Length: 618
Image (cartoon, rainbow, N blue to C red; front, side, top):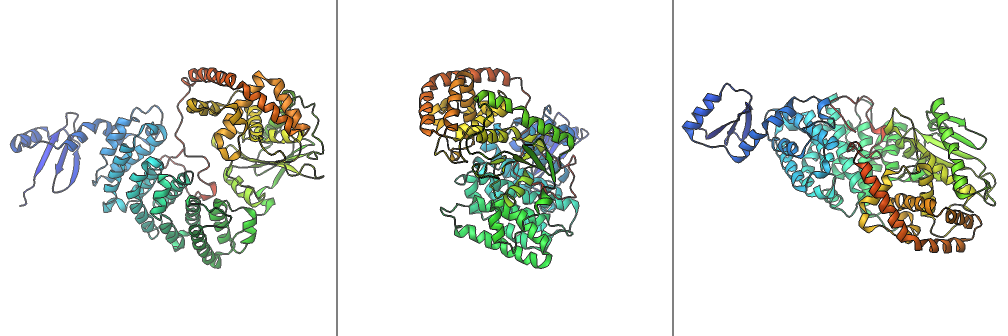
């Protein structure tokens, strides 16, 4: 009989932990019946538990509560287990065992923590510890073949390792993610393996979506160095990228590859780099083979999965018509409603009540605009934009399709006003917007009032078309639209100002803002400048608008220079505003750490999936 070297530790809370050096795993025996046996064994063997075993035993009460918690209890703000201390204990409990259900429950707890816990409080060391445990788990064959674990592993990656500070910890996890994707490409098709495959593809996509925002960051460099596009290309080629006549896996792979392309170092010219061209060619080859088999369906998969997600726009689709297809406009935007003689809404699915509400919102702020800038409701000279076409898409994903393929605009934004050439008779001004699907069942159209202000500004204040004035117009256009549409209710602007409290831009800096200066300068700081001036220098605001309407840019610049002298008063006003907001902020409810609302596409969701209690996302 083989002799084993072993230790037992007794936990007064009712658990016993057994660890065998030779078996190399830990078993928690959930009973108090063996207390006397354990004490006797400890007395005979005189061995003491290792620090790791003792730590696990001490963590047992919290971990046992995690293991018996329902999904409803896990995913809630008042869950007392959602602390960094319990997070650490859950991570430390993720040791290779045969208790697959427990491991999956611990991973589901980590998913809940990523949404409802203080994820910003986690350190790089804590994420590194999680990475080490995940690496151990992916060496266990039973787990590697378990679809629920595969799903949980992928979700844990994109919820915890999507920042530059976690790139080093992510790197060793990319190899098992690759192995998992390749294994799933040949796994028997079932609901469970579909969820595992979906989340595996999303892990690549979400990680790359974050990486492309900081192309020089550690996350981007890690993903490129590890050549994560190769398993995606291999999968997209595989016959199982179309499952039971549905191509959602192929489209998700295309989407992730498009984001990889956006993460690559960009070209300084209009031509793609060698790396970018290699991705384009690889995806085109896959699409061409698919088109031979499925024709228009395959074209749609390529168009929606890859083309629009590289922001290639309408003309490139026309030039690439053998594999790219532009949808029929009447199919994508089938409905039309007249608010008035001057406002028409084209839409996908708004109800009569929603249309009435939208029309009222559009017209209600006109009086505020005209009063604030004393426009006398008189259009600028040579302006023929007598009607406005409002295009409302169901959500951003649909806007992402229609904006690019129907109206040839970049859709990496929250909507867009297209003024056209107002001096041209018959010119049609329009703005594109989409429903705030994230507040449903409430109804609202995102940026509806903001974009309408752009129309009013172009029609009644600024002479000429967009870009007519050479500079110093971004702060005016975006700040004015933000202020009139939001009034004094703009918590995001105050949050931005609070976070940059010691390096606030001056009025001079704000006035010189360009769109390339970032969203914070473009929207939040421009809003704050307009709000300050409207409260303390309302006549100067009127004077600025009149200079623009008269097309006297030199006068406009001179007035801005005068206003730059009020920077000290602006900073004092802002300090007082933020102090009052800090007091109000303390009474606000906590927020969910949601996925970025623009990070995914509604048409990539498998139609047979349901948002049930075991697959929660926010």
